[in-house]
Image: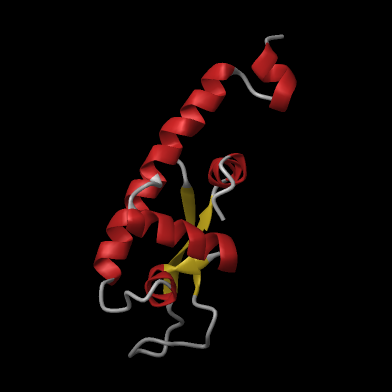
Length: 114
């Protein structure tokens, strides 16, 4: 067991991967998205856009969510919208909910970001 494993768990390679992922979060908009998800939990794109003051830029928020997902910092699931919203045919609205992964939460704690 090396000194890094003794100090906080995980190998040097594991921690280097987390640092690489942390770099992805350095983009100001991505950091705002991560902070909103950390503070409010699971949300869909429009909720995140409103939470970070970009309600008219949902496509840009979605783009950055995809970047975060590609790097394993957010994960998503489809589900019914929390409100009782229905579409024009009376069907419940299905949205893609995003949440932080365990790696993202570990990075936030490791660097004391939030």
